[in-house]
Length: 186
Image (cartoon, rainbow, N blue to C red; front, top):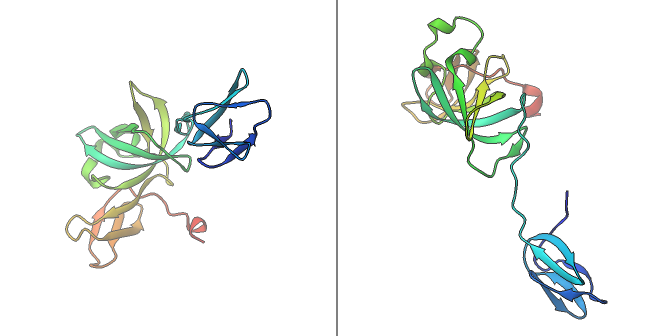
């Protein structure tokens, strides 16, 4: 991975080199005038903008996402993090009904598992078409991490594998809850 220089950062003493695009000279030293990567071409030092790339996507990656839309047989999720690294671009995941849980799939009601706005933890299981990835929450550790109660709009916490509790009102709502990992909270 190439070093990224920031505005005002010293690149090197001028010596035989000339200041090019994205650089300036002060006191016989060349500095970066923009954020980017260094290029030296025929005695000319330049900085070109670096484009932040999203973390590497591979099957098995753990994602954190926000539920956008629910259909009868699938849920659309905006991916926010991949393996704990923030995503810079818009990437959409699809969570199909058969990948929500391992048992009683035919009895599953989508709106009792997830609702728009829920923050979920899922696993990438395959590459879809275009910018969509196929996801699964069919493991105990995967499912809703955070949600707001539909009526009160207040934070809910996990109560069981299929219920969350509003911390202010005590009201409960059905969800496919991710098994909490209390070791991560310490």
